[in-house]
Length: 473
Ligand code: MCA
Ligand code: AMP
Image 1 (cartoon, rainbow, N blue to C red):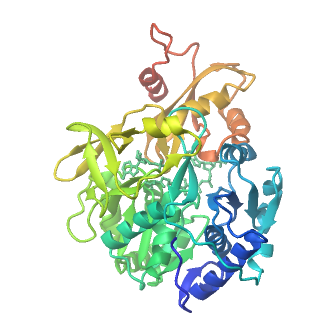
Image 2: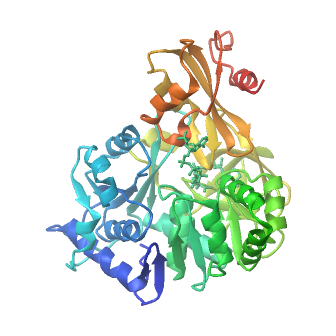
Image 3: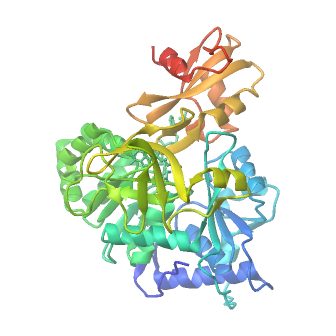
């Protein structure tokens, strides 16, 4: 397990400052309170609904120290999404902070509060944790059904973190600004856990607000920033609307930083170029996935090629199924299993290599060309399944038939778009309102085209490329 050391050094900054010692003590207290009369939680699944900040981190480490599997959930998700997680991995308890108590209680399982757990001064003996034990379950959309639970072990997480620490030359002198959600690898592993393993400082700044980020960059205190392309586009937009004086201040601060990283979705070359022109920072683009952590990266030192995702990270093996083909990955970073889905787990491996579903070519560096499934959409850095959204929308009384596709979008990378056969009175905003109670907001279609019938082939299968054309026309 990654246990942060116990110094007085600053570890986390939210509204307050928290040392590594405080984190160690509070996570030990949390561990003791979770264990109560037991010696080991033995991979009990404990979910948590906590805003980004110290309580989130102390809870995560508390669960790990007690031998549980951490299941972080997004407080922004509607109850149906949370209930799917609770049921899918048989979560037994939910830990919440005060603002999310009501939502947690609706999940129908025992609720514990961070106030109660973090104030525990007990120091029970912690169980011995072997590296191969399950540590974390994050949810990812596949091309079929509702999201699957991706299980990573302590060894997997350690490998993912160590690889990035080495490649990007993390040191304890860094201070990273954290603006990403904390229910995905990007925010949890690349930003939070890397900074803590390096003995650096992680400063939370949620929700993401472009002017706040610019101000923090301008302060000269922040050395590292990692985000998805949509966030860089938003920062550029805010920069362009700012006064010359503000632009100069922001630009100067950003120039003095050590590293800016982009990932989770393809970085458009114009965004890379614009960012470099205003900050002097050539974005380091890398490629990863929930199941494998990070696999490919442009170099920390050396040329970062626009449109390329670089070479395999330390300890990670990468190959292509054919010259222009699917990326396959092997190494200690690769996940253990999809929870309770042994068939899907084995189907996702070929000869011991994990098949990513992403298509690439190698031209002295890997270049990603697209995905093998049309039903996977990447929007704002989130991976979503068109089939999952369609299945939910078909439950609407006034929707007769529908097809969901991703359409290219300058802000979101791809935008979730809906082709609809249904009652003429039904508007996009009515559908959005209805769908937001059932799906995470980034899965809710934001573009719609009404048709008499969907384009289908002779076998009755919806022709997604024609649907996309209809929406884009
Ligand atoms: C939100 N909205 C959207 C989308 N998302 N509309 C269209 N497309 C979307 N994708 C709408 C909402 O419905 C809402 O609309 C309004 O925008 C504000 O919603 P909010 O949730 O507040 O959105 P935001 O704060 O503007 O979010 C933008 C964001 C966010 C900050 C870029 O999407 C984000 O944090 N993305 C990062 C995702 C990430 O970390 N991915 C990593 C996973 P209305 O006003 O009508 O209500 S991938 C990963 O971990 C792998 C391993 C990897 O490689 O990194
Ligand atoms: P997730 O399942 O949310 O972890 O998303 C992983 C997916 O994000 C990958 O399979 C890719 O399709 C996509 N992805 C991540 N980084 C990049 C990148 N730099 N360029 C293109 N696609 C990326």
